[in-house]
Image (tube, rainbow, N blue to C red; front, side, top):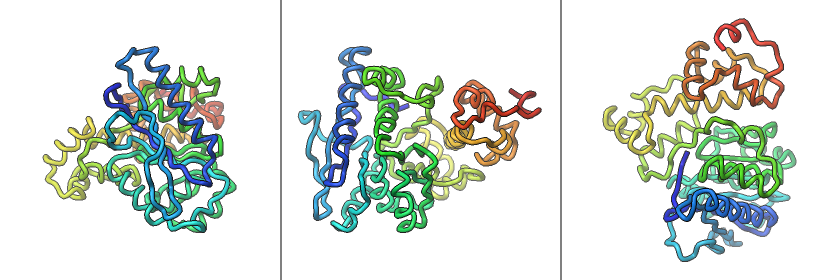
Length: 343
């Protein structure tokens, strides 16, 4: 999990335009302020902090910095960017979004985590960054987005889809879930839970997991490695080898391995394993699939190998994880004989 210091706060930007729900824009701004206060109470003046900025989307498609919670601090790279909820997805009828899309692609290429809430998914889809990926939004926007962007898989059954570099959330009030997710990512679970408690909002069972979410570094500055990370997050990692990654990066295996580990802190093989396990966690939480089916859909041909890797990373078996965190009733089904033997 990314950690920052008071001297180097994570900056989270929020895009503001006339269709945006200002309750979400100001609500997120207030939430991050509360998180900063909770962080200082727990860790003192050197506590991790979040800097909040608002970015105005002009009628000509330009994007300019407006509000800044820490204007005295030098302007740096955005750690995350939020596309807030809207009541409609008619922005394309009011302005040319080509400049906005280019700006989003530039931020993503620098390592900024792009996020959307509700109708904000339209701007994310317009950027082209989610082609071939899954995206969630409010059900009222799903058909129009799916029709305009057929290469995007719109899945409104999920409240949140977190692919590390891109996070989308569903309903109008899902900004609360997204805000807590980002507080957890940049300030830690303890601060997130205290923020939720102070604001009297439910952090959700998935946020209260005793096990950390895979949130790899993307602000390391190595553009070659960042492109490979983006590729991995948007692809099925089954069958992807070190040689394939090195070839795609245009580097020798040893050079690629050294640069990848230096940039992300872990080796490419473990990175792919953590991506697969992150996918399997969502399947365990939200589906009725058997452990063997979850293993297969997560990229593992051998369910026993999957169980071993899952336990190594999270400290418990897939069956135990499902019993604790399933929101689909998966923990209520009768376990298979294989589950009973290996749990």
